[in-house]
Image (cartoon, rainbow, N blue to C red; front, side, top):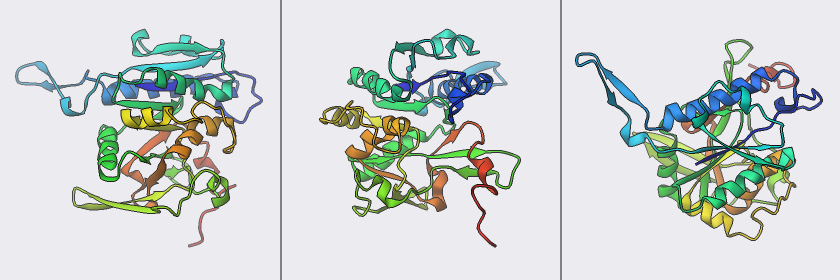
Length: 285
């Protein structure tokens, strides 16, 4: 199950893409995010047998029954303009504060406990393209246990600019997350995949705008006294709704920089990548 927080208010006053005047980038981002979930993970996949002229099912071992729920607040959304079939998602309207929509998604996930094997939250501009995404998550959990959570590295790409691809959630100052986690506990984990070593580090920046919990992890989090307490003390309301609860509950890891692409998720656009060479300097040669 995927719960997506979606908001758009064209005030043009905010720093977030959801508050800019032109709705087209936001429509495109959400449409691609939803379409990719169906194209990468649903059972509607095939290979064309040219000799027999027949479509044969494909990727059966990696395909799933998926449900996508879009959580919105009031009339501040673009669902009516999405170029997608209506059955691709379900609409869950709320009256939540826009920056707290992530908490509304948590309610939806909790209320669905026992019905799914994975409970997933996404901001509305995140795109998964890796069909092995959940296989990697399951492998990591089997290796480390359910109290350890692997977060994907968010990235942006662009054919222009100084860098073609940039991972955008680098380390925060240790004091930012110190009240909520102790990264000195099991700071590094190692594994091997197809003969290749992979390394995972405790995340000084656990925020990825998303999370992916198996059934046992979701149930454990929902049992905690702080679940849905709407604490916004990590960076801001948006970041807290997406990340603070899981940071309090699990030891969060991300793939180390030298194998950052082991688990990754695309952030639509190039707002962060375009800072490189300006507000973000390149290292000296």
